[in-house]
Length: 168
Image (cartoon, rainbow, N blue to C red; front, side):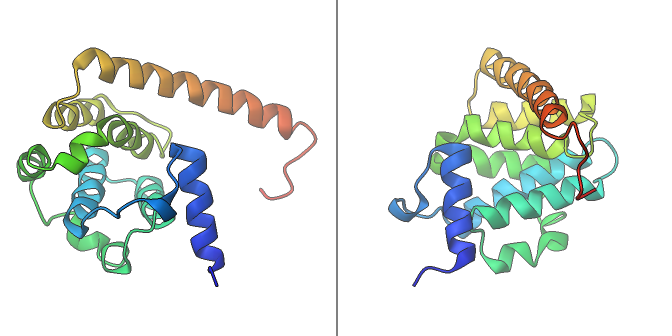
């Protein structure tokens, strides 16, 4: 029997990326660690890893089925590798390169979780983008689409919660 958590992860992955996680080979633990560490390092490029950024990363990675060994070792991943080491390791990973557009999108999303997409965070994500061989114009397109999506999502939430959000 499938657990409720597994069903939630499957639903999230399908809705947010179009991936049916029941029919794909899981990425290696090192690739998941690198993905997670890269998001942490990009968020910290502003000088501080904000609590909301870290929560976004943990929630996102958990929703995609990251192993407990990674989720429970977020503190260790913050300093496991330097930024340069992360970029070097990413260059060697065909799996991470194949996810480059989503990887960059997720880095942007994580960095904006605190409501501020700092210029230093953007530069850090550009470095990730370069390590993944994503062209600069594709990075700019993803960033612009992300910002448009956020604006539309804010409008949608205002429309849906015009009466009052009872959960706030």
